[in-house]
Length: 467
Image (cartoon, rainbow, N blue to C red; front, side, top):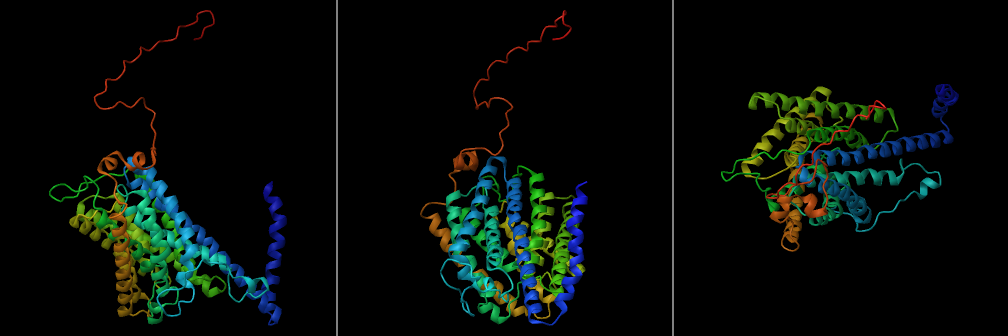
């Protein structure tokens, strides 16, 4: 009977909609103010809704990484992911946002200062800015946490947690905001006409470059490559977890790309966001299908981790321009991304570079591909400018990451001791296991197990007819 009570709320509201629409068509000062206020509300709602979706991607990265590492390293992965998200949020408040957006004016970075909301005009009834400033800050903040998550997955199972978090401070507070200011902060790349709608290069390639440098400094996990240099599989703890994490990332990507429209106050914005959602989904599907077909043709079988990364490869590939392609073009871009991801995965194995979750092929390689693919669907894109953007951001992130990883490696150290690595980061780093199976007392090597007590069967109580 609850639905009847809702009718008393919904029906009067629906009756008011035509009156609101009529009021907004009147050409009066009060009508313009009302239209600005409605636009302000819808734009703010878009930011907040999409921010929550992107924040949920942190859970997706966590599950994906936890499923792809061995069971002895799951708890430390969970700890790292909730920690890096928290570090990213505070660093983007303390320095990152203003460094990325305030007073860049065609230059190379903004100002070193904490962020503060500036809604004074809004409080006086001036809605011309178009959105609540805190909603914009929150939307931009959840993006920077994504870049740090990329690094976490690559370096899993052999990096110490505190050096990783120190690097996260530098990445989210300095490196990412500076490169972000070049384009999204109206810096020098923006003036040149560089295009990257939602961050194939600005987010994913930045995280990918930082992860690649970290992997080179850190080295491969023990046992990942044999003496002949051949890759040895180290199966993860839970493919169901990894699959669920991938689906969560797929869902969050609608906020990642859709929110980057930055407006939802007109029919044109609504159409654009709808196209972005559809193309984002098509690119992920294209990535999956492309990997399915190529895996069967090349290996004669399917590979679930590759298929999962195929979805992510498609998503990264479409992120630079999800608004202008047709659904078919988006699927092709995603499928090409899946193929490039597979080739890059094999190439990393050839180079003996250990990437636990395949983040470098997915985020770096497909981030570069997606940024170049813009020229095929957006007539405003210039291939030379796109290449300049890719190279300049890559060089800066590499140089900054080399300096940061080298400083950490040769001071406090970045890699677990080999005995701790064999034991697993769960016990050596945080002193607990992610999975505790109480199947009996754990028997140490060489220890004699205790005798098994005989099973005593209950006697039948003949008088009562039961046990």
